[in-house]
Image 1: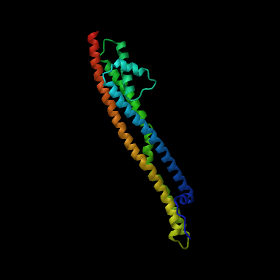
Image 2 (image 1 turned 90 degrees about the vertical axis):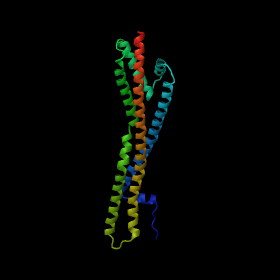
Image 3 (image 1 turned 45 degrees about the vertical axis):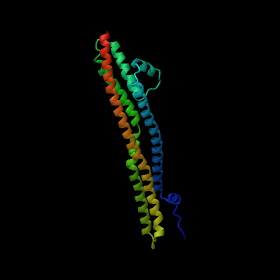
Length: 228
């Protein structure tokens, strides 16, 4: 008599605990892939936004013109948000205290730092979930495997005559849990590392822009003071 060892049959015949483990791992994998696709689109869009804004910013456009252009937008992202918040603070500080044009860059730096922090926080949102899936899924799968193998040996001990055909299905269904755990963990780990690297590069871009923009505002403040 031939024993049906198809994967679907093994999953259907698995014990309740192993089935629960498999279901949890499959759900974690589905959520991971959904998050990976959403986060990939968001980060790629942000990178494109950074490139486009830098080209626009260094094209020689007037700071006031760029500020007015961005003020028409209902939603600003990345460098757009950092520039807008920084220049808005710069204009506000100049109007509040025209005699301290050189010191306003301190408040501008703080404003841009807060804007950059909010942008990075939005990019990093839910990344911890990928890290959790990547680090825990193999162990959850291993728990299901150990539980299934334990049940197989318990059943084996209750039989007077045991054969490989009797033990193999139980061990095979248990090992499927580990396979599903690895299937959930590997993409999550790869995606987490890749996204973290891309976000770190964006943070460097934000920091560099803040320093360059601050230096530009300092020169702008000197010019305005001479004209005053």
